[in-house]
Image (cartoon, rainbow, N blue to C red; front, side, top):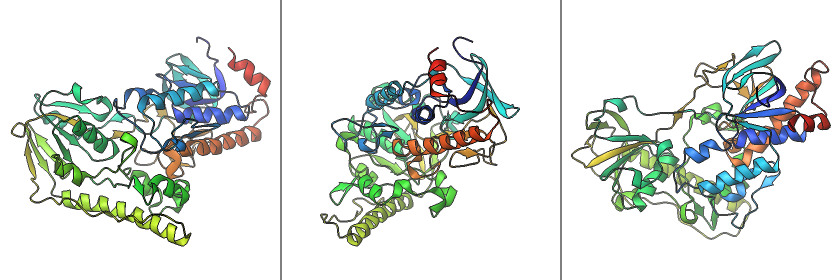
Length: 432
């Protein structure tokens, strides 16, 4: 089995920022473990983001355990390749025991522990941490295969730059973070864009003299536990607010896009051949996004007033464009559309996890990452515990909580079976 052992006190599955944060916290406690990554460290950042991708949260929020952003632009927004370097540098900094190219094909119970079937053989574990996010399989609308073969179709995870698309106009389906930023990328490149707008909310980039993220951090929004949110666990299904860090950061205003030539439509409902059916909800979707935007502004206003903070006045958003007659049908051929980019998200695939730890929707049942199966944990999911859980700013805290739970479980178990290894023994094991 190469250099892998047949047993570990903890196996962490996934070598992205969540798995590495988990490794850092386990190392700090002297708990022997291995991190299994089926591809390479930070694989999804390398392969599922376009060339001009950048963070939408400022660099100062990059707070992996003991490895804060140390660059010269804390209020800037790292580009894709800089993000990859940050994660890879973190892995080197903590000397993470990562084994790349090892995929876990099945995870099952074995006594009080677990058995992992991997591409490198079977591995037993006392504890397992699933740090594989919830974005596993690119999702498109079910009628995609009924569209005319002459139309190029790609998912957002495969989009790299405008040059990979054929000449002609482009339909972007979905107005979440990826959809709006890809539409902007195409628009800035001079391509004619059509955008099917969904219900995602938006957020101001800068407001009253600061980045809105700075204000929201002061307000404790990234620390708000899911059980204190008005939607409770329902917030996990919410789309992220759209804005951009490109060129130093700015709002994304779809109404402004329309003034500049982007064609906006309501939600895409159905299609066959070259003809699509669209909803009549464009006005509602734009209004709701603006309502959330101005609601955030009001929250910041109240915080400023309550704390008597000196901050410049900034007007709330007023629509710069209103749709007139919005078509509910679109002929791709007649409109000159030659390609579609599906920015419709991902679905989860936990089929390889043979553990009774999922609810009726296939979501892992957990509290702060501690699942309903003793010894099995999840980390890195959006709103695992707070809004910051799916971001660099909150992942370390979640990993710390899970590591504490693993340590307590080990201490309470039979001596010699689940006991955390001494630091000297840990170092010796991981030196092989």
